[in-house]
Image (cartoon, rainbow, N blue to C red; front, side, top):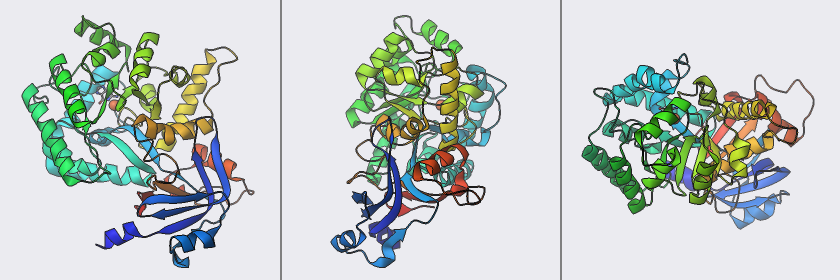
Length: 433
Ligand code: GUN
Ligand code: FE
């Protein structure tokens, strides 16, 4: 009940506001206001006409929060691809590439999630630490285990594997399908619109065509999101081509299973052909760009500019534990670095991504990638108030230096900030940090 009261409480934040309305440039109000009621944004104004808004929404002075020197408010980060179950391996095992890494490090760890108490410890840490690092929406992979995945259900995903699986870590097709449907029904019964079940065939090498088709049908019947991996590693791509002779490409495998929809997010997409990009663009399917993982597992350099030019929606993913950090700030830096590295091989007119573009990819771009662009991602009236209060005067920051304008504070945060600078985190209007 007290949680509900907190949730329903209306408040106003007054100060510098930063968000994206489009990819090309940030929108910055040096002194604006955001009013929140019932978890939703009810007003966003460039000049802070506080008294009028207070009166309109019956908000007393106690619930008007003025940001101080060095502070700004921005939308929460969206992690479009993170394996909650792999968190204990973050930072380990980068002496191998994808396929060996999976069998040597990843599957053995994921098998431990038959133990609920192990799962509970990890998932609690993952949720706490992602929130503390400013991730307000995460598209989670879990494991094949029903009970531990339900444990993660507050921000959870199911995951399917019935093929090429190590002994003791696989599912029979019927079980995979049935457990997935049970999971969907259980989440639907919870009636919490902050938690969505997601259809998760792990990738084309761990699900056969029969199961993928069944999952595609399930996604369509319940109108669900879908997540999987695509074209991450060259050896993986060859293996997929060898395994699915009647498909013309990796993307065609998923397309034939009806897994490419406008609610599908494909992680990586490092080695996609131009024809595959056309298919993804036509289906409205998004790519989760995971540069920390693509570098750590030596998968390759993903050319995000090329994806964007092809009209594909792009969000950012940490891909823990292919990536070692669950911080989207880290992913932003890797995105900028990789984009510069890609540009070295191109002509003068190839433009590496800017920090304004990276900010978009981490917020509104991510929201659009996960097909929630009308609910989250920036500060528009009617959207959930998912937000971070950033304080660049926190430890390790700029308080000894000169005054910076808001855009410079954002730039400094993206390049030099960390979780200590994220002093408050809101999800749907509720303060969670
Ligand atoms: N492809 C299939 N499974 C995985 C996984 O767990 N991590 C990564 N990075 N790629 C995958
Ligand atoms: Fe992944």
